[in-house]
Length: 154
Image 1: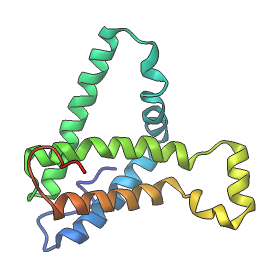
Image 2: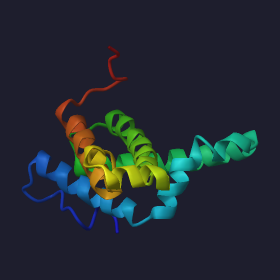
Image 3: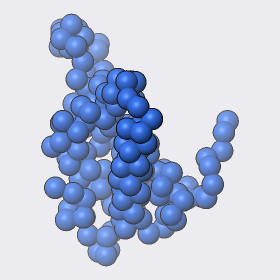
């Protein structure tokens, strides 16, 4: 399942609704691919540490191609994003997935803490819910503040 069949960008939807629907569709699509999410979560910290430059080059070329396809999909749903802005917006999505996957699938001892003490309940979010919320904020921000070039630094 992908984003295209779940959201009709030609309909009379405002950008906020499209961001919410797109975030929900993307979160559901990624949640349905747990092996991909697991690999993304291990990619930078584990998988890329013991490979040759040739393997790293091929892997990064494939990753770049996938990100460019995702950026194109962002432009499809959010035509107000230019190419540069949609490409800048695609990479953080992968970072969100990899980080949230790890945090939403904690070690058994950490899960036991979340389950035993309601004060920690907010830290034990479900992956799809956490990704949907994070994507919504990210997509809404992309649409609300389109710009070209790198983001300003504080």
